[in-house]
Length: 288
Length: 288
Image 1 (cartoon, rainbow over the protein chains, first blue to last red):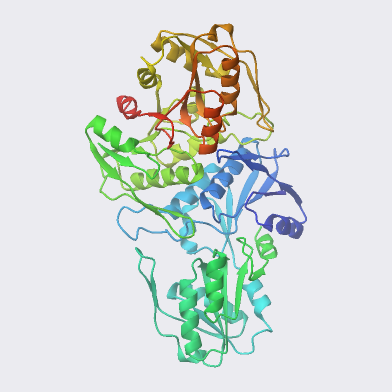
Image 2: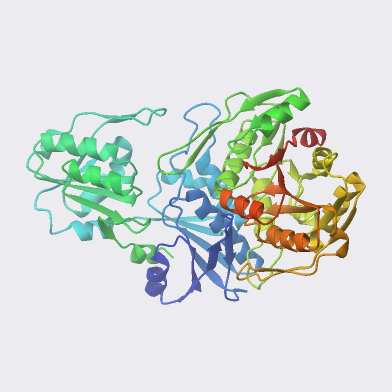
């Protein structure tokens, strides 16, 4: 078994190979002047089980195509089994037709990965686990909350976990249970055309608490800042905002920090700087 | 039958629909703040034959993923037949393993298009026609040289067509025949690691001629400028450089213009400004 690190492995290839005590091979890659990607597997893989590590953060489409190029090349070169580790799986929020005629992007991306040659797929905290059923091979889901709880534990005297919408409730429950904390959620409504977010009341229990907001994906951070402001008004003692996949740019991070959030926590499924980053290589390796 | 214009149709959707006298539908699309594309087919297509127009110029990977999203959505929405018109097909130069372990990118991209739901594929002047065999449906190739010859005719009193390498010879022959001109080629060697190009002797016949250089893809333009300089030294009367797919940026175009090339000609398979652009919608429509 070998680990093949793709152009968007974000360091997780090293960590996974180390945790599994197997050889790490970095894919040979470049981008031509016209913008096309070049991919080469620099080592024979015939009869070998290969774990490809490639996240699909921005530029998502380039990283998806690079993944497909690696998968099909590995199959062509007769690898015996190919497992795609996609720590952050792009396009997972478009998992149903909210409006008639919409592309089911989540399905299409999973089909591209499956059809390019992945026998198995490993994803960290997918947006909706059931949407992964579009992948026709073996699917394994990595739960990042134990590693996150381990990082948070000790720093918070009165932890209280708050999900920024009903869909994030199960995640909040998992984290709360690991922290021996209570949890709740706020109601959220998103206008799908403008992207504008409205949030409901924050529960009274946040008063005096070390509130931990947890969501799977944070991008502009508008939901996080709105919930954080409401929690501050509700008397929260401190606010920690956790996103498994922290897609925000520096301007959004700054806005979140200025909205009363004491600490921002993400993971290394995507590259992000200026916040606390939890390494998930051990959690991923455990599922391989 | 309807024509569906994709985000990278580059105006060819309008021209094709007009030439076929069928309804033009523009796909509903946007890019979310995090970089993901959104695709929606704004009209019922059940039982309808749909011609999707989407080129795959830079950013190639985004345009490829958008094409896959459109194709799978059309299939989901029960279009009776889906033809993908991909005027410029990206990744077509990586059509074999030049080095062991390389991805066969050309094959992977054609597989993605086929597997996403295209029943037929229409491509303008592919880099190597035989590489299109990786697409398992019906393939039609559009020859752009008649439209190009029509544009050039009349302006050139002593036309002589020169292919910048042996691989471009068939194309040069087609254009020369339409212009009642002679043709030849120069030898080219490209270092696949550095991309550096060396060219051989320019034939003596260029002396006093209106030389037309023709290549399928021009990117940095280094081959064109080298051949143009050599042709100028060989006594060419004027030099016209034609590329079917003109991928060059403005800096490269300027360099080409400063190298003694009198006129640059491209087509609308990709967006390009500051040169003569030949519209290919009629040629494409004829193959549908």
